[in-house]
Image (cartoon, rainbow, N blue to C red; front, side, top):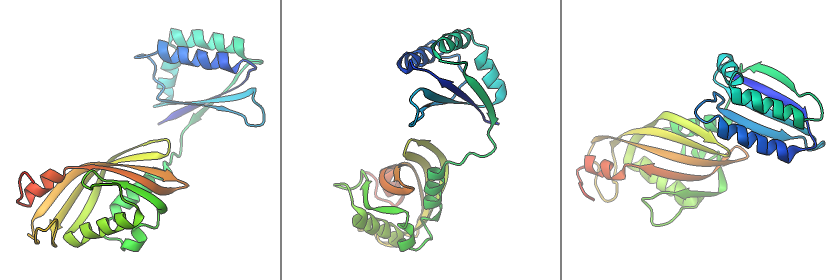
Length: 229
């Protein structure tokens, strides 16, 4: 189970502490078990600093604490604090990546949901980056492109993997379909096809505002009988 440690301290020497954290990251490469660290400064009290460090488990956190480099950095950190820091150990009981959930729902419903509802979670200033197009698309053009895919194929997405970073979510997916309408001038073949791809989506206030697509378009065309197109 994921484990999180909160380190709460007060310091008037934040820049020195920040450099100390950089030193710890450098010296523990290949050794540390921490997977994610966030440092926050209190908006109402600049001397109040909280570090949140995530580990795969409590046991891995204890391994990390036992590193000689960690022990040395801790002593140096205490020397920079105005008072003794406090530690809170937390077992994570709920962890929701809300943007990931929105992206997953978007893909899982893409082949069946009404087109109007499909774009309810997309901003009016949405920008779509598709390597198959001559230029980036705005919301209206993206809706029309998506409608074209829906007219040509009866399809569904399977979400294979997701990662989130800041305001962006990357979804690795598998698309399976049957060719039931004209596509790039090719009449319906009834052919069952599949392709894999990845999409980065950028979020703003819980809404998708930009997307970058990568997928095997050449492989799809080959399955439809047009090799080398």
